Image (tube, rainbow, N blue to C red):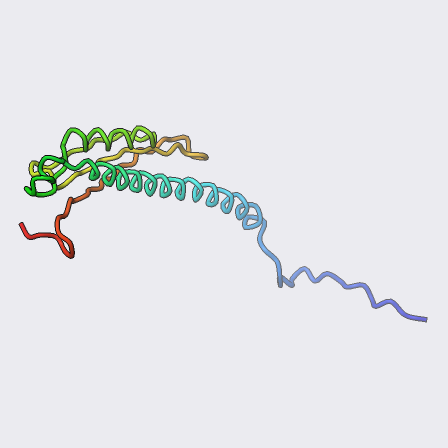
Length: 147
């Protein structure tokens, strides 16, 4: 016959492996709250990266609007200000982002200011995010020409 081991007696003074009721009750809500806030924090970061990427691509789209009269005659490469602004605004509009576009006086630098937003999933707030990007038209086969 096999004998059963004696039943373990509880030693109420032994606290190995024990946690206080406060820690047991508070830990789960704190972890949950931290996780939920992290979702919105990463959402804001993603929205800012998106606005920055859209501003960069809008600047590239605007840089394609080269002034053909100056380019063909060899005066240099410069953007047609009206066409460049229109191309950038069209890109921003298609991407669903508000923004402005400007062309420098010499037509070689295009600057885009884009404004995006992020509506919180768990925090009832909408964040407005700003991004700026620019494109510079360069001329030369191996490196930019010097001004």
